[in-house]
Image 1 (cartoon, rainbow, N blue to C red):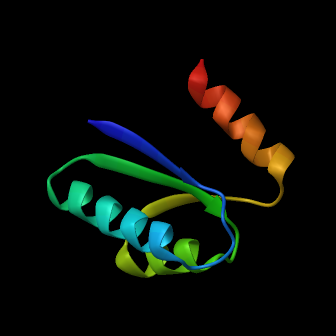
Image 2 (cartoon, rainbow, N blue to C red; image 1 turned 180 degrees about the vertical axis):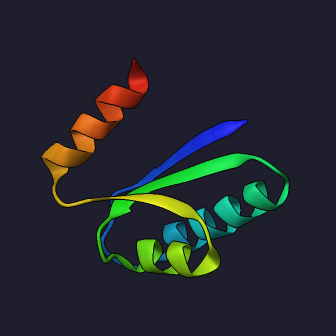
Length: 72
């Protein structure tokens, strides 16, 4: 299964912790996981450290454009 996980928050809270646990668990089970997250956010940094592939965006317009491409 291919999964694009989107988290646009720039801080670390419970949702970001759950996102990272989900990403790592799915990847361990053989799924192809990508994360769309704010550049230099705690989630992006921790995902990078865990070996997850992620897409960093620099602003909201860029994130919206990436999501629009994925929807096609």
